[in-house]
Image (cartoon, rainbow, N blue to C red):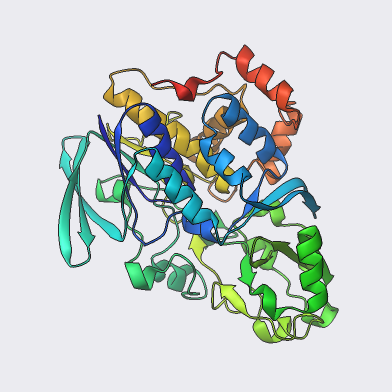
Length: 425
């Protein structure tokens, strides 16, 4: 069984690990020279309902990536506005940890390779056409998982945002994102936000060393620093632009909220540098990602695939999707969960077995189905869903599925007959 995963973000890495766990030969093709995508500058795990989803996937036997993350935290069990029991991983060292894990499990990596087209056989993808340096390569497999994300290429950030902000996706260096589903003829969905196309990434990264000694001490000791913004420096309306609606709280407009992920993670889609430097403690502030974070940020959710609850892309027999390609789910935890399910079902497809659909008795299964229903049946392309806040977190609490009791989560997964399902070969 041969499976190709396109895109090496958290979703793609999870799909590759899961498909390999089930015995498939797995090739992961990544456009850039590093894995994790936006996970290279993210870092927030286990906050709010993400704790529940994490422990569900672990109880179902799909928690190997979470184990790697849990061993790389700078801060554990901290709180910041609207969020409890968060853990922050080190963005500087996370990627090599994941790369070594994939290699140890036998996942083949093809880095700096940009998929540009598909070769079809009826309603199935037969092969991918890709550029690797100056060479064109043809990559054939029986099933494919697309986890290419929804941000870029620069033309989208120019058209729908404030221009290319020079973010970690590095489109100018490695070429922009190409949608495999779109190349295969699938009409993809485009997110909206207050009448605008897409949504702006919700945070920036500052060089910690450019901040005041007091702010650095607070970040090092507590993992979070909340600095009031003088009235003259406040920016109104930014919260409405954010992809990450779980952070669209007044505290994030009235304060500079920083999280220590190795960088100082600024919980704002952008902040003009001249105004930022007027705030005490930020006189020497410098952006690390995106480098033009004073002007804008990357635009996301401009290419999501219609799919079923097994994460198979509609209209195609052998393409599955994960991460943001699977819909308006925001976050690393969400990408790992969808990636695991997509990789699992890609193998089941090749083995001639029916797809696995997780029941709504799990927060993961409920999220997968709810996002599909809200987007594809109700046409709600202006919402964002996440385990950590906003609409879906409220649903979790209403359905009594939000829990930080590991034993209780394990019991619920066992009663649903889902214990260790992702460990099967």
